[in-house]
Image: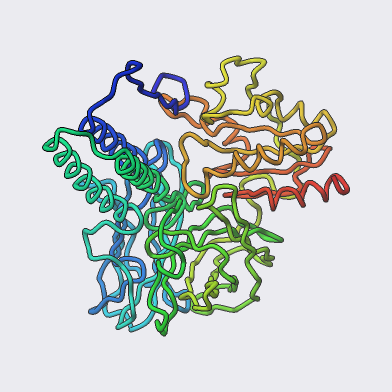
Length: 510
């Protein structure tokens, strides 16, 4: 990584001399090297945001006897603020003692459970704080004590699409080397069609590997699990469909799921509870007929306040999408939510229950608040765009004005806080592309500004605007009225489908 610059994603081509032919064995080897490089690079973590790699008990797992501990392991070291919460189906906490980050392995944290848990379902909710920059990601999944159908992989085995991709590449490696050997013995090149097919299949496998990790989102999230943002980061899928990635159709307790949460700054009043739904293999489950049932928690009592539908907003990135439940919180304190739903094929998902806190006021600007004074860096003050954004394909117009200048213009403004080069989960990655698409259609009528999360990339240093706006997670998108008041605040993935109606409302139809 070059000092003070975002990550480079330049792709270099390699060409031989004109009129020469590379022997088949060398061509095959080159293809394999490229494919394995894609897998090893693309399946690695984003530079700044951790993802979960293992959890015990595993998502959807049925265990007997009752487990004594829950452990979650991440790709990057964890800060001491990281936590794990485990609740039963009444939102009662069943942990014993604090969450501890392993002193010998700071990538893992664990929490002890009460002894002899009753048979039933339990939800693990985790919040991971990155030790390097404090970035926070959150997510949840369920396990059960008792004999419940499960699809979790054996301990120590790769799970989900990444493991399948590596297996495919192993098979392809053997196949390509075998063809190369036969061709060499016959002293003639293998058929071009065979080479092309092997190269294509290998490349597809490599690309699939790059899309198998999540941030935000559940075990392998936002992190975020995870988690980014809330992330749940986490967190991209070219994997099994909803029908093939989950438990058997006759599972009496429903198909096990994971929830990647993008709601870390909830407050009294109308609010937006955003999340992603993943299978136990971390594959995104789109188009679930999902609902969110909210509960006020008081001691051991859980009072249901209502059930609202969760709308699914598909992203421009095929493997990304966000569920949004709009609700109202009438008091500060502990709350609970149960995510339920039905898959497109008619199977129910296993309910996932999470505790969370509602504040009297949010940390970040609330709807109706004036946008904080912000004289952010622009191309006028920092001509090198690589110092302003980690976006590998930046739209220069997003770095042309300060928030203060945008407010003074009298036009509505969209301000997005994101770090596209560092948070590559299903919650983080699509946001800039979504905003660019909206900007292309609305430019001239609405101002669009991207504020990079980091003011320095080497080392990573959070931008001053993150603190000024009270943000502890990202991405965030704020829609401001023409006089600079907050009209909407969207944590996590903000899609074109959500943004356009908001702009139409503030502009009177667009």
